[in-house]
Image (cartoon, rainbow, N blue to C red):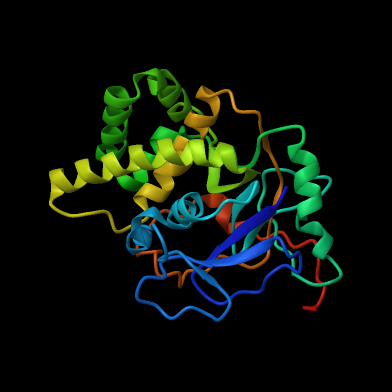
Length: 273
């Protein structure tokens, strides 16, 4: 079974040597892209909406334009990693030949996925609920529109939707590595829900989202879909290979920054290889 994992990025970035990782430039519409990078504005795409969908424009592109048996979406600075001794916290390492084994390889991913459907990232556990955090940073209207879409179009998901909103952690960063068939099923549902929320918001305000709202909403919806469909998922450790980039073109002033993104726990000082 072939494995291809896409590393979403908005700039030229250092890549793991593991050949299963492919750089995918998101928000590529109208922009110059480094040579050798895939673009999210080819084929069937929503690249122009990257300011609101964030890395999910890469997810949409993956869904519509790729066919590897095992696939995934990770960030230019966040990778699933085979690391013993911690889970669910962002850690900062340096990519190098010396410690490249920390980044999950195709062989490791395939072995793990022989016993489950998909690997995902867990957020930190907050004192506030997911609903409280979302209301604080984006307002109640967006989540209320999402609830209305779920209740009208997918009523069987309603109880799971409310249950996930009342939780104190969520499936984080829209990252995953898993079987393409599972990703396809999820994205088919997700982008229908997000598209309807997007349209409802536009009808209400006369404008579209510009501040990563739909990307963060997707994080909540990921957990809703996984639980409702009884997907055999596993939370898996993630390492950070660089510090948070505040120059990201989609990180508008006032945009939500979850506290876990500020953690800086280095456990390797290997020089770049």
